[in-house]
Image (cartoon, rainbow, N blue to C red):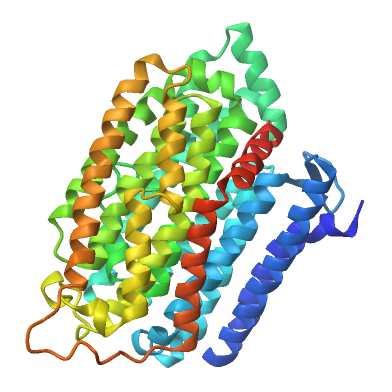
Length: 497
């Protein structure tokens, strides 16, 4: 075994261990340790990605070198390594972009606690990406939930307490359904290792036995993860959680936490249940319908908002609907489009939240649209960044959102005759609605205010400016150089099974 093959395990262990170390440090040193850990994991993930691309094969790593059922396994392929690398980049930039506000929004005595939660969140995301054991995935789902709840309420005001309570209630409901599904699968198959479960499920399904229990298990798992990732109509917790938390927390929650649950769903569809069984169970048709509804309802809710942070949050409901709609198409092309949209949404939504805080800073800290008039002149970089993010969400060429919508449109016309027309109609309606609320905001921030001096620029830190520039570059790279990324996703999905 090559030494680089140990890196996924090292990444998870380093993130967990750093949480313990950070608890003994003050805020300044906790920030440094957190930055070092994310950077180290990012480098290790890049090395793993290069290794699996070179070998062209996925591999398993047995922790403690004990085979199942005594030991636990990590399975690494192209998609896992790439997703781990991408998540680290987004998390690091989100923290850098919102770092200046952490000092104001969080008491100094609790700043090290914030970085403890971030480290635990990183470890849980990495575990969800890499683990090959279904119960281990559930354990880290709970760690992810607790960490995310802490990131919401650490700001400590009435809104965040309410948002954290709603988030916890809905997340626990989703976790309970996920656990019930796992228990039923274990009862039917006697295994917790993903590859072993798949062998048993395929055998049972083809033999015609346990159809009802298996369909119930698949339904519980899908609904549980849909609740945790805020698929319509389970999205009521999302606007307050994203709208009132710190800017870094909002960027991380919207771009990474929900995507970790969705990535786990991808793994379960391919590696635990089997894609053919998923198609035969017809569960994806339900996900397809709710995905289409989410695309429209999320956008309509965003149009009605008068708060820029909550508008961006409701936009996430629509974008998560896109992902589930792609899964619901039931084709490999649809799944590729969904995975690509995970990347596009992660990069763009973080950009929007970080840019929005620059616009609100330039408007007396107000998040109301009436006060944001001319903010693009008062904070020029934030205005440009928000415009780039908005154009991406609308689906303008040269940005990542255009590639996502193009992939969804092309995938729905391939082998999906009954789903093609609803998909194209909802794509068109959602795109128009996206243009209404995002372009309305862009016009607002670039509308001069009579009698005001919009030439006065708001001071911004080097880290904040660098984060915005990097987010914009990532967005353009995803939009202009999508072919190798799509090819990588296709290879990764083939390795999944």
